[in-house]
Structure formats: C-alpha cells, structure tokens
Amino acid sequence: QLQLVESGGGLVQPGGSLRLSCTAPGFRLDYWAIGWFRQAPGKEREGVSCISSRDDSTKYADSVKGRFTITRDGTEHMVYLQMNSLKPEDTAVYYCATDQRTRVCDMVLNDYDSWGQGTQVTVSS
Picture 1: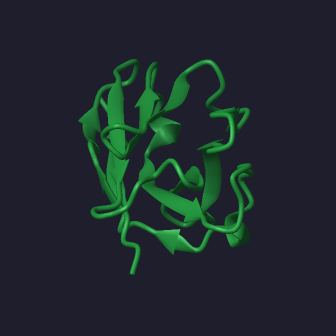
Picture 2 (picture 1 turned 30 degrees about the vertical axis):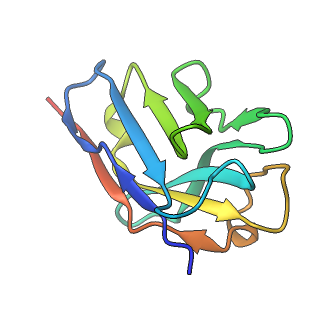
C-alpha cells in the first residue's frame, strides 16, 4: 500500500520561505506524476503544482507562479516544494499525492489516487 508522507511545514512570517518534502517509504517517486495540493480552512482543496515523471515537466497554479518551485530527487525518492515570498493567503494544509495512472501530471484533484496526511503551513506575522 503506497503511503505518502509530507514534512517541512511550519509557521513563517510573510515574505519568508519553506521547503516541503514528500516521500513514499519503500517506493520510488519517479514512476508517477506527483502533485502538491492545499486546503485552507473553509475552502476546497486546490492544486498548487505538479511534476511529470516522463520528462520532469512542471505546472503551477497562477497564484504561486514565480514563488514556488517543484523538484524531484529520484535518488532520494523525494519530491520537494520550495515556497518563497510566502503570503498569508498561502496558509493551508499542504498535501502531496500521486497519479499512478500516468507519467504526465495535471492538477485535477480527482485524478490523484494516493495522498499523504498533510503538513500545516501558516504564514503570519
């Protein structure tokens, strides 16, 4: 059973940075498309970024373009989300997920079939 584990969340001031990590113990993450999603209180879960396993191409939500970067480290079986210039509106629980049906990513929530437990990111002064 694939189980994803996120880490790296925390409390940061506006303008600060965090790096989230996603791993799946016992599995390589370079087989499938990987997505990062977030859910703020009272809001629906939304796509943030994703990375394809076919060519490591990436996609970003408009709200995070130029501030967030998704990368894959196949050797360490990790996927990272580097978040810079954080804003209060980035506050949410962040989840990583895999789409095991494809090597080409999208940010369609229902396409993803395995999820982590989430890590809280709070941006506040």
